[in-house]
Length: 437
Image 1: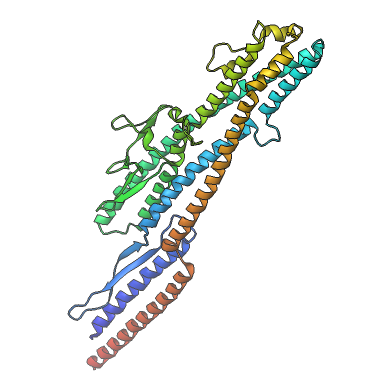
Image 2 (image 1 turned 135 degrees about the vertical axis):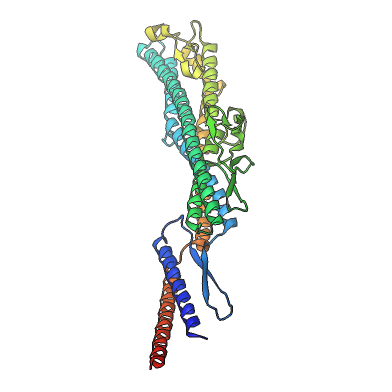
């Protein structure tokens, strides 16, 4: 081997050690970044006439595509379950179900007690006042619950709009990164960090909607929902939400049913009035509660008025629902002494016969069941996602101990190649001095 070849090989080795040191240092610096994948130096040895040695080919990142897809799926599930659990918690707080006696149940019980007390002493004006006041408090609580449920529904619709805006922004970001990755690959530049950023954006999309990702031959990520609706192809799709339907801007097609999970999918399913007959508590959730409150109101109104002499005890003026307008007849609130003396016994017995209390308990039990199930599903989905993420990071993440060991090996290689260069330089000087004589 000539001294010139030795110098070239040593110089190539120095460059490779320097590049490897930079890669290892970057890996260590980003070891705690959950969106960073370990980068690996790619090199080979090319032999030619009088020429051999290590040659740097580029930097690639560690990938685990199948596990990554599993992580995205579990991320969507966990995000959807988190949204359902938060809604269930809000509904539980609204109905006060964690109290020893929920507020609505207590008010209904107070009304029943007042009726029985009035039955025992119908001549007692105080007892008549108490029947009217407890009935009024019960009616106002039903009004309040219905209004709060409608408010929660509107809040949820507004949140879908915000989430769709966030989705659109992330899809445009993925489109931009796709173009940069394809351009850099075509020019032979490294794309690992760009792919990390793109994966991070896709993960954020997965929190909003269930996703499936395919790669094309230019390294671009093609993103779809699990049902096949394209989110990102050559360009990013954009979506619009009008408070009721989700449409794709490119052709105005309605794609509401295509979003199955994630934050958006969970909210759309809870808002879907067509699913109120489903046994899934996370389907048509808001309308189900509104329907239950309406049904309870209609039953209460019908039962009480059915046994009370005119004028009617309860009234339901026109409005969005009887639950929103239920009230005690103004004649009775204005003059409780006009309450029919037989009302206590007749109404009390009718409430028992028609099981109005049981219907009320059913509303509370359904909400409590939804809350418990949503919490359980969230815990399971979160545990599954975290376990899969840990497995994924084990495949593509940075092992600092391994990187430190690689750094030591690279430093030793650098020192060895430097020694070769110094020795070759010394030999060249010796030869030149000998020729000069």
